[in-house]
Image 1 (cartoon, rainbow, N blue to C red):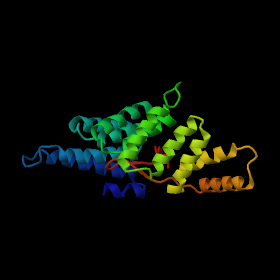
Image 2: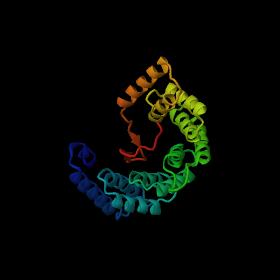
Image 3: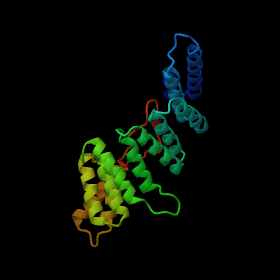
Image 4: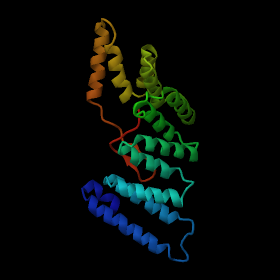
Amino acid sequence: RAFLKPPLNAETLALKDFLAAQALAEEALLDPAAPRDNRLRVWVLTHLAAAYQTLDYFTEAEKVLAELCRIDPGNSVHPYNTALVLAIQMKYPEALSWYRKSADLNRADPRPHLKIAFILLKYPEKGRPPDTAEAIREGEIYRRLTGGERDGEYLALRGEAAFLLNDAKEAEAWFRKALAVDPRCRTALQRLVILLGQKEDPTGEVQKEIDELRKWLQDYKPKGQEGGPGMEMKRTDLTFC
């Protein structure tokens, strides 16, 4: 019932239902027959954290996620979701460390490596340049875990690294590959407009392509970015496409 209410603009009622579910779960755990491995508590708290995040109660979400990390320390989902909540608040250095922890806990999950690379390129620490070398290294891990180069995210990541290194030719090649895989890749569209616009005396065909790319950008609608179970990132989409 709680999950049905946010789309109906009844977030406060939804939160009350989540809190009621938490109370019922805690009561159920008092039963001697209840599972002793925290499954029920972890499940309810994960969704409670998601409810807090959806309602922008970030302090409460962080507290619940800290408890989840304490009672279920081997689960990579909790650090991943912690990083997500921090990234929404633009706390990128803290988010970076939690994405790294998630990656360490689950070496088969490609998602944290993409987020790490994105932060390294787009949101470096104040006063420091983007860490392109480390971002490329994380990108290669992401590529290996996703099974190859037919992935718009990886291709755009490599293009962004080349762009920041002022290698226009290589950046354009990577971004064209990204658009061949994902014609709506946000970073590739934005950067190609810049790269093509920098060409001296652009031909009519180049200008036509720039206009087409700008139209794509104007019509662009960001894709939803899912977090771990029960989590969804709505405003801070740490993806290249």
